[in-house]
Amino acid sequence: MPNSYIAGLGHYIPERKVTNKDLETMMETTDEWIVERTGINSRYWADLEKDSTSNMGTRAALKALENADLKPEDVDFIIFCTLSPDYNFPGGGVLVQEQLNIDTIGALDIRNQCSGFLYGISVADQFIKSGMYKTVLVIGSEIHSSGLDKTTRGRNVAVIFGDGAGAAVLRATDKPDKGILSTHLHSQGKFAEELMVIEPSSISIHRTDNIPERIYPVMNGSNVFKHAVTRFPEVIMEALNKNGYTPSDINLLIPHQANLRISQFIQKTMKLRDDQVYNNIVTYGNTTAASVPIALSEAWQKGLVKEGDLICLAAFGSGFTWASALIRW
Ligand code: COA
Image (cartoon, rainbow, N blue to C red; front, side):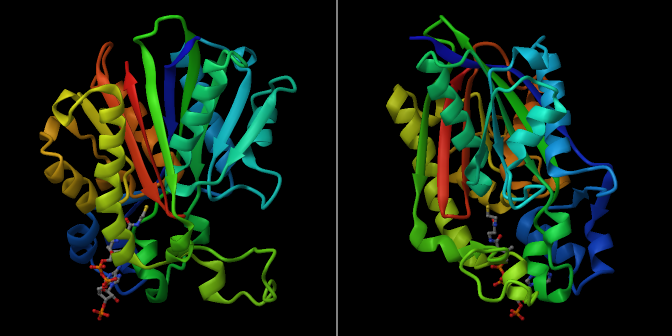
C-alpha cells in the first residue's frame, strides 16, 4: 500500500493589512482588548476587485505545485476546503479546476470550517493509500472580511477572523516510514449553533430579510474556548498514542490558529517548549480552513519543517469539529 506525503506547500495572503487600530475606527473596541483576549495584532482583508476565495486558493496551489516541482496537469484530484465559497453552489473546487486549466479531474468541496483542511488531508491520504490517485491538491481558502458584522454588534467575532489561502500537494510514496502516519477526525453536532452563520439557508423563511443575526457569524466565544482547550490536547494525544509517540517527540505542532490564548493553553497542558509550537495568528488572525496550510507553508519556508521531523497538525472549530494528523516529514 502506498503512503502519502506532502510534496509541496504554498500560501497566498491578500495585500490589505488591517490593524487593531484600524478596527477601532469601525467599532467600539481597543487594540488592548484584542491583544489581551486573542493575541491578534493584525489580519489581512481581500480586495474583492481582484481576490476571491477560489482565485486565492488557486494562487496558493500554484506555489505549492511549483515547490513540489509539478505542473497543474500532474494533479489527479482537487479537494477545496472553505466556509466562505465564491458561490453558495457550486463549490470552489470546480472553479480552481478551471482556473488551473486542468482537464476534467474530480473536485471535492469540504465544509468543516476550522477543521476543513485536516479533513481534506485525511480524504486525500485515503485516496492515495487506496491507490485511486497519486497526486492530490488540498486547498484551504477563506474570505471572511466580506461577511463580518463590522459594527460594535459583531465585534466579538469581527476582530478574530482574517482572509488568506494555503495549499498542499500530497503524493504517493513507497517509503512506509515517510509521510502521513495517521489522521483522526471528530465532530459533535449538538454544538452546531455555538458558532454558525444561518443564511443563506434552505430551512429559512427569512431568506430575503437580511437580519443581522442570520447573515453574520454568531459565536458563543467562551463555550468555543472551553471545548477547544479540551479537544485540542485530546486529539493530539490520540495521534501520538496511535503511533507510539509522546509530546516530547513532536518537532513542530501546528495548531489551527483560533486564538493565541488557546495555543498557549495547549502548549502548557502538553508541556511543549516554545520551539515545538508554531503560531502566526498575531499577524494573520484566524483564517479558519486556511490557517493550518498557511502556518505549515510559512513554517516550511522558514526552515522549521525539515526532512525526518515529526510534525503534528491539529484543529478545532465550528460544528463542533476537530481533527489531527501526524506526519513524518
Ligand atoms: N472589543 C471590546 N470589547 C469586546 C469585544 C471587542 N472586540 N468583544 C466583546 N467585547 C466585550 C463584550 O461585550 C463583554 O462586555 P460586557 O462584559 O460589558 O458584557 C466583554 O467584552 C467580555 O465578553 P466575552 O465574550 O465574555 O469575552 P471573552 O473573555 O469570552 O472573550 C473571545 C471573547 C471571543 C475573545 C473568547 O471567548 C474567545 O477567544 N473564544 C474562542 C473564540 C475562538 O477561538 N473562535 C474561533 C474558533 S475556531
